Length: 561
View 1 (cartoon, one colour):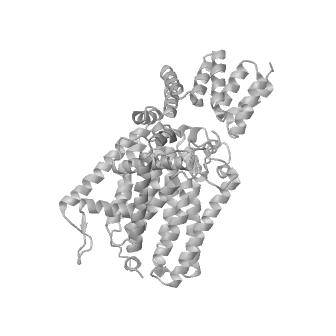
View 2 (cartoon, rainbow, N blue to C red):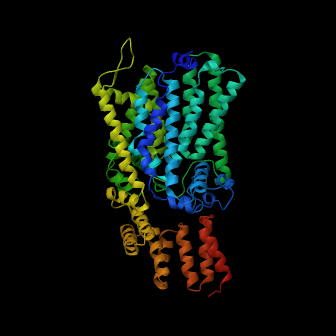
View 3 (cartoon, helix red, strand yellow):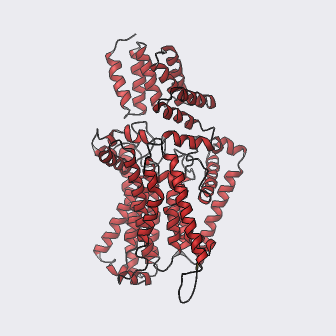
């Protein structure tokens, strides 16, 4: 039995309260984001327009449809995320603060379970706890914690962590007995499957859980090795279960995003974009301020810009390769916890290297799982920078000097202040888009969405100006033309509306909302047959779009022209 296991078996584990303190730190950092914040980015579409969340269809429908089916297929299969939103809707109604509070509590629970896991795996090493404090209160995680729709990242982490904690239990509890083997198998199966049903990133646990299982069995003999193999089989079965459910709902087990921004771009161009994202991720981790929460519409992250200036992408890929080589070398030399942590963190980033074009080029919420898995590595690195701990034969991790502890305390306070500041970005749809545009003034989707935010606030002239700005920046952007046409139709300017909405459909033939709006304009003009055609096309693109169903019912009952 390892020394840490022996201490745990005796009930004398040091730092018993540290997981709870880390969870309290996460609450202190993020609870202000739950007070007075509203719906941001696409929260309103996720909560108020989703029939599963609203409760107008049975809850089982969450397992039978795309996460965004009511808006058009996005290739996202996240039934557990949908069900948590449904539960929030039942508890809080339309009160946005309740949804934000659930996000904060989910993050605190992730931190708590991660702390329990650290207490089992690193009973005598203080440095991982410094890394856990960094994870608990890192401002870059605002994408996942302060944004309601970002909770899927936390769900992808929570269940896998629980499975890892179960695997890391003290091996004196009969791990090779049938009951212990069944527990290992079940935990890995449920942990992997549930994480993937929270968000596609959860596929990473199919790799992480076997690593933890074999790490625990490495020096424990063949009986525990058998338990590790059973846990690995459980993780594989969990992966297969999640992919099977995805195939039943979406028609394919493969994780993909239709109409991705990089669809049709050669893999070399996609890798350059991924390298640019890696460089941005490194910058945000070191300086977690002054960055846009979304860069999908930023030309600097487009393949054309990176082909004309490939060096940012090349530099990002080079840093990634160097870090990977360093982790492999450290694993070969010593198999230290820091090396394992760095290797897993890098593995967590590999899905975002655009091997398959994804629905988003880069966003800070991609950092949630990589930062979680890098907790031991980050803690050792910070301890080395701050000079916080030193090895000593009598006290392996004795605090080095008061100044170092003061530096660590100031760092934690600074991170909390950064979280409070960063959470303001997610106070509303307008605040989110203004934050994007402050960093990326050419981001066309942000101009379009800012117009929607202004429209919700009754600022019609500013909404029109935002949509015109979007269409001027990118004349092929369908959504701006659709919104301009919709407003013209509501104002009774029928000919203008028909012209604008025809342009919207021409530029975005796969934009279901544009087809619905054009159908409404044609119906207003007395062309019921043309309107019905538009509504049918919208339903082909987005079978769950209720406005298209209602419009089709009206069109098939009205007179033809």
